[in-house]
Image (cartoon, rainbow, N blue to C red; front, side, top):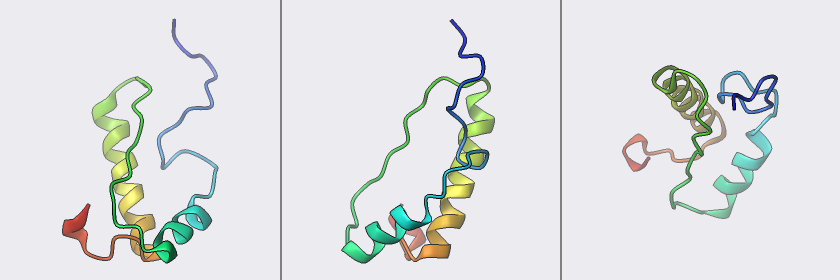
Length: 71
């Protein structure tokens, strides 16, 4: 069944501010992988591309994964 009115959104559409969490990860020295769950929103090619673009912007902003080749 479709999730009408779902709170699950692409990263660029969500209202939750991930910066404090991402700053904590950056300051901890963690360099391992961070994954995104795919909740089968419609048009994954679109929302996943927008999600990783926003993720990369946030990483640059908070200093997480300073080396772009590392993620």
